[in-house]
Length: 385
Ligand SMILES: N=CN[C@@H](CCC(=O)O)C(=O)O
Ligand SMILES: [Zn+2]
Image (cartoon, rainbow, N blue to C red; front, side, top):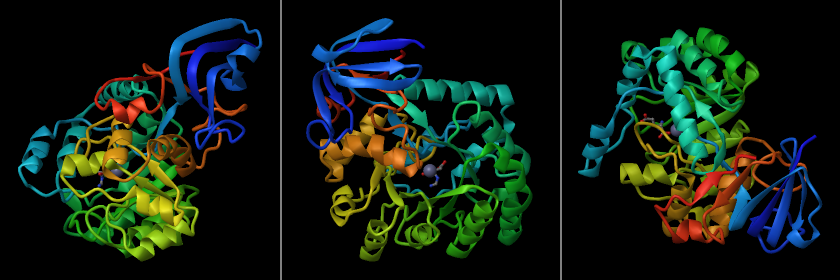
């Protein structure tokens, strides 16, 4: 057993109700990590002895960020599509085919190297858990490969064969859905924890409510847990379907009716907001305030992907949620820690109570308030213990 004592913490965010305010803050704090788990938390003056010491010299420490929505397994470049959107082109999911072509053409080692770089980029910005989806393979072999490689980096892998109908299958959508719920699911499920679907009647490339229901129920029957891309491009059935089927999370939630908000508030389904997508597609931001006031659980994630948001920065998402979505700094920080952990049905991450995984993120600042206060400044990094 090796115990590491972290000292010099000006402000420690624990999410432990025994401590101060909505974030459970301990000031002038210390924390002990023993074999990867938090074994002691409290004021530095009471800290026990340990084998090793790390002094963070007056910085703030928060739970490692949980990025519960990303599409990191891709090759190719769509920066021109982004530039076109900034001058008025709408997003409809059609560009996904460009990433599919480049991803299929990449070797395993190329994809692995790209993924390694992206996961490291996240960690260097404070993210200690990441969910990674497939969805740029869209045939049996390439979806299976994407998940197999993603599994080398995280247990939170999501089968997204139902991202869009690939170009070669456009003549026969129902044959493609048959493939997704048949051979593709069979090949992918050994490497996936979750199944997801882009349920979006406003995109000709994505899936209808009935198609999405088929994909989700087949995934569930195959032992996977459910997540949904819903209500991104307009009002639609995604949120209601996610709640009806007991999905852990419905992500985007850009356009919500009162019924959607009420359904989320009276369910266990987390509303995962992805403000980087609104930023990078010039779309209206949904109101986090409305969801929180109604009683829904809100998570925030990057959705890091080559189309709608090529940012790996959770701190940017916090700043956008505070500036554009009516959330307080406390709510936004909670949404990238406890909220996103809940969307992954995990209780060992997203907080720093005794027994949690010792995932610590340190800020080059005395307080968590500096995250939205200093946008664009690289304040956060995961602490290597
Ligand atoms: N909207 C669906 N899928 C991704 C975007 C994928 C892409 O455009 O490459 C998203 O979550 O925004
Ligand atoms: Zn997504």
